[in-house]
Image 1 (cartoon, helix red, strand yellow):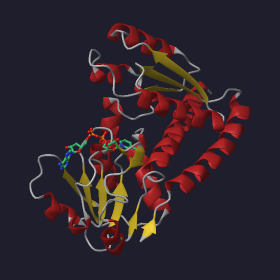
Image 2: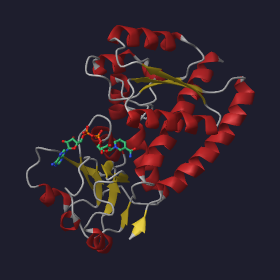
Image 3: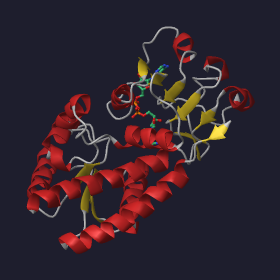
Image 4: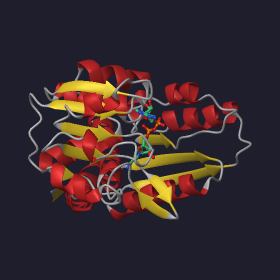
Length: 288
Ligand code: NAD
């Protein structure tokens, strides 16, 4: 069974981006800039945004991180987003999810200028993903596709089964795989006889956030398995299926799998950096 190494590919992508940014900075006399907003002090979210900032800085992207108190009102958050929307030197805006319960996530995501929406979650980008190659693609599905392509995994004509239908992962992943000419089945919490569907998946993408729901019996022989899930077990980061108790049977059955950590996670960050550079390039092109 082949391990699809997201860490190695993400490193290569970052190296290429760093060279491109150096060239673009000289040409346009300014660096790409991302503004990240986090509301609240959830330690997991703080570690995510700090990691994103660090990755930006490593390759020459300027990154402003605003950590706002949990008590921040929706209007205050919307006012900050409007300021950043109007700032010509801000290329990308990212609001870290989830938001506190008193703030409407849909309203906030719609308030971001879709041209600066590096998470690809604005309705305009969601719509463009269906009909145009110009959409800003959500980072996790984009990273998964880059990894499959870099590993020469054939997609055209394959049956891709996705477990999970979130706006962040499952739905855009389905759209992307359709675009790549796969036949796509999306499963979710109300799916009946999940195993019957997963056993047909030549590419099986698991994005649930529950360990042990999928086992080796549910895989098709020779399947390529993408484990998106992140679970914390006794302080250790584990996926939905990778290295589960069924590990020997999974190893025998799957052709390839993404590890956790080191698979989808680093590719998500690499794709975020690619999205920041993309929106920057579109912005400087408009300034010319
Ligand atoms: P989510 O909670 O929004 O969605 C989970 C999905 O799983 C839902 O669509 C639900 O219908 C489905 N589901 C739940 N129980 C099920 C069941 N019994 N059978 C079939 N389907 C079931 O989560 P999300 O944002 O899509 O994230 C999913 C997982 O991926 C989480 O563990 C998250 O932490 C992880 N994740 C990882 C990355 C990364 O970069 N590695 C990025 C995003 C999300």
